[in-house]
Amino acid sequence: MKKLFQYMKYYKKESILGPLFKLLEALFELFVPLVVAAIIDRGIAARDTGYIVRMALVLLALGIIGLVCSITAQFFAAKAAVGTSCRLRRSLFAHIQTLSFSDLDAEGTSTLITRLTNDVNQVQTGINLALRLLLRSPFVVFGAMVMAFTIDAESALVFAAVIPVLSVVVFGIMLISIPLYKKVQRNLDGVTETTRETLAGVRVLRAFRMEGLIRREFSERNEALTAHQKFVGRISALMNPVTYVIVNLAVILLIQKGAVQVDRGVLTQGEVVALYNYMSQILVELVKLASLIISITKCIASFNRVEAIIERRPDMTFPETSASPSGSDIAVEFRNVHLTYRNAGDESLTDISFTAKKGETVGIIGGTGSGKTSLVSLIPRFYDATRGEVLVCGIPVTDYTAEDLRKKIGYVLQKAVLFKGTIRDNLRFGKNDATDEEIFAALETAQAMDVVRAKERGLDSMVEQGGRNLSGGQRQRLTIARALVGKPEILILDDSASALDFATDAALRKALGSLDYSPTVFIISQRTSSIRHADKIIVLDDGAICGTGTHDELLDSCEVYREIYNSQYKKEGEGSR
Image (cartoon, rainbow, N blue to C red; front, side, top):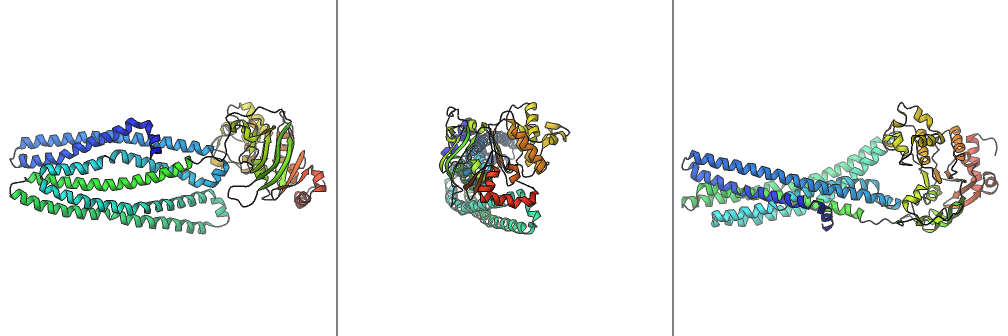
């Protein structure tokens, strides 16, 4: 809770004024039964219409003042709760951006989305209710009991007996419910995860006619969630009838004792009604307090889950300043690099060593799972090598700041990802202040000018979320253009031309070779035709380099490369080496 207060400290005024105005509202509420008693005993008994009207105006004034206090308290409580949750969500989102790929893989996308949405909302609700009710409810309960003693000590003993019984029932049900609510929350996470996965992969599910299976899986999880919610709901539902039975029994006893006291002239009828009203106030506030504690428990549990992410230290740190340039003509160098992913049994890369000079084109090829993407992911330092060293421009990647390192590198991921917005907004990811001329030059190189020309609004044409309104080839060419806008020193194309036809692929490679700033290009491809003209080809097999050289050299010396080439020879219709 102390850490939650660190986010609330920016709203000290609201956090004080909210409960304060709620206490004022409660104070005025405690006077209402006394006014009602006065109306009965002095106004109605004496048939004094003027007095009744005056007291009715007092009741109206108390109601208006209470309403104003309540609205004011709600305003301050809501401002503090929303502001705190906003800061918490901002802090969480900012921290997620600092996590490495390994950290993100370990946590999972669904978990992080749940923390950013549902858990932060639970914290907001808990803070709001706590500021309004945490002080008010106990104040009304004990205030009502004190007021009852001021009316008649003997009758007030009923209050002293009923409040502990009510407390045991209310908090007993609460203690049983809290663990069950936590289980419900875990089931809700499961339903959320299934929903997200289903919606993301809806095309695959339909392609394989798996709608029935996923429908049954979703129904099972949803029904499990519903069953747990019903179970905890039944237990929670006991609170009202049990407490009302106890209170009504207390009211019967109170009226019975009050009737005797009235008959003896010790109490008036109005005072008995006031005692009854105080008993009702106690019941309402205890039920509110129990619900509040459940909400606070959910709030604390949710905050702990959020804080667990925020406290997670990234397993990758960057220096504050980059090392000085070495002046080396080698763009990328791997020195005996090994890579083992977190919680993986075997190495994904084993003893990788090679150099790539500035301006060279390096092809990387190998079978599925041979470690091609893992290898190039070490260059922008998405992952850290388990052993060995990766150098960019003669400097270890660990000596660069994240911004300086990734400014040198243009990375086109295997899966083409575009964001909702205009084409211009998407391409400026590569360079924030890129001019239209720079964007058009990158589009020309990426063979994507026809995509823009075909759009009525050109660069201002909208891209739907994930690039849904574009074909696979169009998305790939735009992501290549996005990487080229910043004129990177190192360009990595991770199988990013797989959706392009051979003519477009060839035109792209030719355009890359004629760039005036001569970047070092890494091309990962399953096609030998895409890398055959590279200055150097690296062949991977089961995470290790099994061949390095030109196309012709590897055909003579590397059996793995020769097998890949021969398997595609007929498919691609290549007539000769």
